[in-house]
Amino acid sequence: MYINLVRIYRQLMNYLAFREEPEKYTVCYVETGNLWWIKRNLHELRFFYNDFSFRMNDEVYNVRKLVDSNYQIHMRIYRDGRVTGHFELRTEHPTDHLKGIGFRALSKDEKNNIIDIFKNIEVLK
Image 1 (spheres, rainbow, N blue to C red):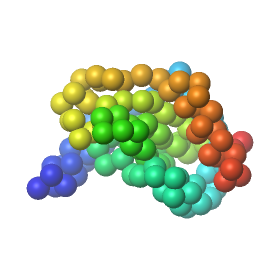
Image 2: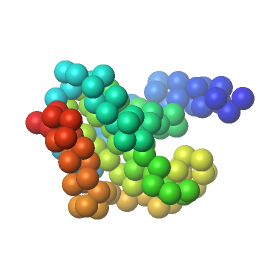
Image 3: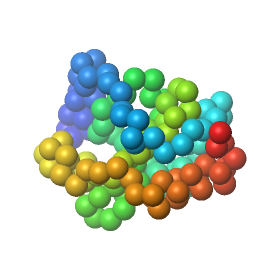
Image 4: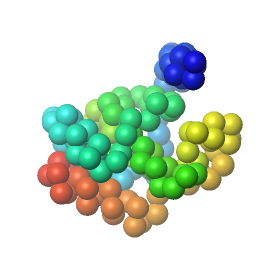
C-alpha cells in the first residue's frame, strides 16, 4: 500500500509542482550523454533512486544516499548537466521531512566528495 501511495503522491506532485532548485544547491556540471554510466556508478556507491521527492524542471535523474539512520544526501541531475544536492532528513520520516527539519545545503566537504565521484567516472564537465 505504501508504494501505491508514493506513486499517487509523485504523480500528483509532478503534475502540480514543477519547480526549480535554487542555484545555491549546485554542486557541479556533468556530461549527461552517458546517463546509464552515471546511474550505474552512483548505484555502486550506494546512491539509489529517491522514490519520495518532488520533480524539478528538466530533471533527468534523482538519487539519495543514506548517511545514517536519520539523514540522507539528496542529489539531482538536470538535462543541462547541472548537479544539485542537499542534506536532509530521510524520507522514512515523511512528516518531518516535508517540514524541512534537518534540511541544509551541502558542506564544502560533501560537495567535494560528489565532485570526486564524477571525476573518477570521467563525466565531470
